[in-house]
Length: 64
Image 1: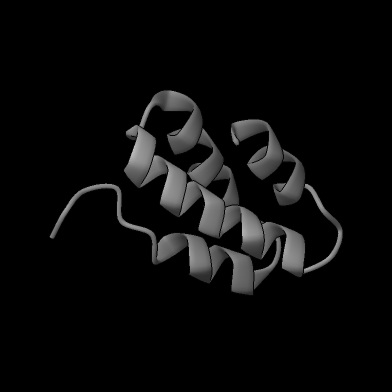
Image 2: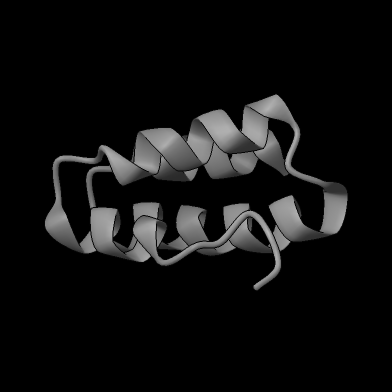
């Protein structure tokens, strides 16, 4: 799943990186926030597109 999310995050279209954010959120919560998931979320939070950055910034790695 990490490879799929990574490939989607590099997509040139808006839908790919947005799907990557959703995968990171689900898989990070399910499998634990190991370093590769945290790094990918960080990369999405630094994405060039504001919508991707905003979606990634809304992902929490710890419970409220």
